Length: 289
Image 1 (cartoon, rainbow, N blue to C red):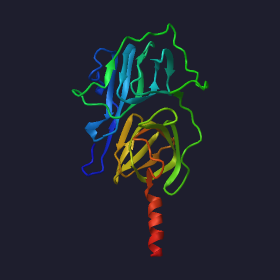
Image 2 (image 1 turned 135 degrees about the horizontal axis):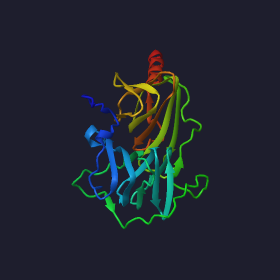
Image 3 (image 1 turned 90 degrees about the vertical axis):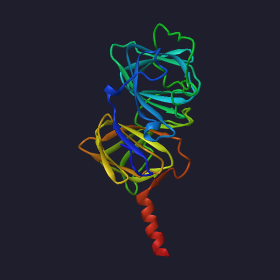
Image 4 (image 1 turned 120 degrees about the horizontal axis):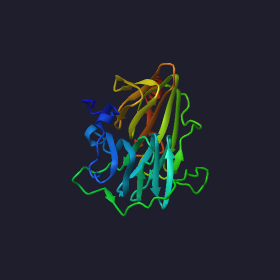
């Protein structure tokens, strides 16, 4: 739903019944997707979707007037980019820079699904074409797994837990955030990351200078947005606009896990405003005066 106040948000669920062929991609084979966050929900920076490619499906070689990041949720996918054909699988991710020719295909026996972020936000149908199809891809006879430990491998990775970015603080307990797609990786317009809330974990009320989308992957939690709570379980998603107050509360006996994307990229300081910390500071400053 959308809020009826200036603080915009949207909560929904991925539903394969809502998948359809995207406008402009009719020449592709077996490709459908569900747009989850775009202009229709109030976003001005994001084009977020969940894509699906059927067995023997192919997205023809194209270039986009935006950069995009894909995270594979299930299945296997072949990526053709920079003269290479790469075999990618669940929990692999890759970045396609602005105006970079690329193609995707599925040679497996089951569909492949992925989470996709595009920024700057793609244009509306009827405006200039920001997806241009070029000469057909030349696919290698066999696809190779990416050499992830090779320093020459760029813009392709595989998610793994690492040192979390956030430690416990006022209103924050049991939160782990693993950012894997950012400026150093090659992204200029967005961040992509994985998050986890341990059993009993809380991410207290806060807001941001950017937009955020969260897609639930495992476990359960409540997200509180502007004082209202919404349950999240695998397949549910939520979007919060700039300045929208939100919080997370883990539920059940298993950690809550999600994939997250933010746009624009965070400023170097004060991108998150922790309301509990601010209220504590406010109380101290008030006493002094």
